[in-house]
Image (cartoon, rainbow, N blue to C red):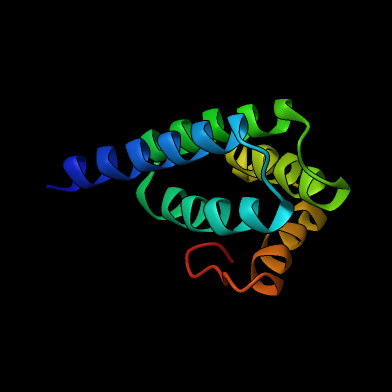
Length: 109
């Protein structure tokens, strides 16, 4: 059951990010989609992390975000790629960005 839930979360995250990378999105949209995906990835493990990373990379490469959104996406990619070596300031940027945009994280702290 846990594996099915993990795969479901991964699929939703991938589809959400892929759709956003193609449509013009704002930083607010990135937080609305990214924060729950990051929180789920932090809770469920590597399959969700891989899907979230793929979506975040596509979003980053689209260059459709403002400077703040781009910085948040870069920090989030860094965190998910290597959570043990992420700088404290990058982790704080992610947590604060999500909280300030109405999406407080419960699994990353």
